[in-house]
Structure formats: structure tokens, C-alpha cells
Length: 182
Image 1 (cartoon, rainbow, N blue to C red):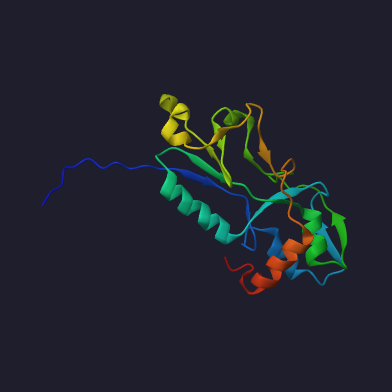
Image 2 (image 1 turned 45 degrees about the vertical axis):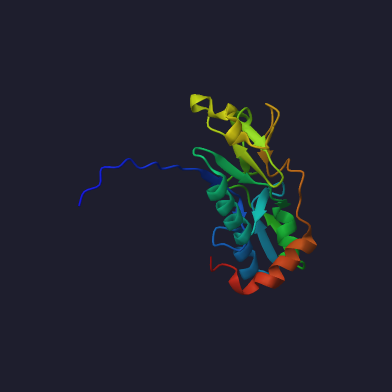
């Protein structure tokens, strides 16, 4: 009983930002101290991409259905200022700015200049195609995508889509019992 067939395996990558309410998100931290007089914030300019767990899973399933291999999928999601997060969760608290910790970023970057020459835009996501073997020119991989400009970046501070405080409040009211458990 031996099998000597060749296996074709394809891999793709999904990039997404802050999974709202996950242990790695600032939301559970702010929720735990929301009744405090003071909320510590590293920097008043700080921004983050905001994605729900459901949106992240949706992107993974899209990648499974769409991938040929080597692509990087990036969901279009809103950004939010960390100060707006804090104000929404703890509206009566003051903010103290404590400075950025080692390794912490002021803003998140999902697509940098080095990726832009291989990046295509779709209705609800971007796809970075592999440069190897000129796969970034492959019409099947590109599909209905539109090439972004060669100076394009996708960062949380320059994002065109911003989450409103009311949207975060709605999400919090629907998901409060799950926060910090994923």
C-alpha cells in the first residue's frame, strides 16, 4: 500500500488588522479599566485597523475559493484612532499619554510601497500577487482586479474608511460577552 503520486499544494496568506475583542486587541484592556478615572494611551496619534472575527473568517474562506497559490489577501476594513476607542468604551475617563513601548507601532501597515507594484484592488479586498515567475502579470490570478498605483500604501492612518464611535458602540453591545475570549 504505497502511494507515489505527486501532491500539488497551494498556499496563500491572509493579512488583517486588530481582531476586535481578541486578547491581542486593546478593547479588552479598555473594557477592564473602563470605570477608572484615567485610561493610559501610548500616543494620541495612534491608529489601528478594526476587523471583526467574522470578517477575518470571511476573508479566509474567500482566499480558499479564489487562490491559485502565493497570493496575499488584505481585507478592506476601517481604521480607528485609539483615543476614539478609549472615549467610546470609557467616556468619563481622562487620558494619560504614556509613550510608545518598544516594538509598538504608531500605525498599522498592511500594504507597503514594496508591495504596491504587485497589488490589485477588488470591491472588498486587495490582493498582492507573487513576483516570482511573473505571476503578478498572470490574468487568471488578476481576475477582475484593478492595479493600484506604484506609490500605493494601505496604512491605518491614511485609510479612507474610518469606524465611527456609534459603530463601535453597536459592535460592543452585540459582542460584550465574547470580548477577551478569542
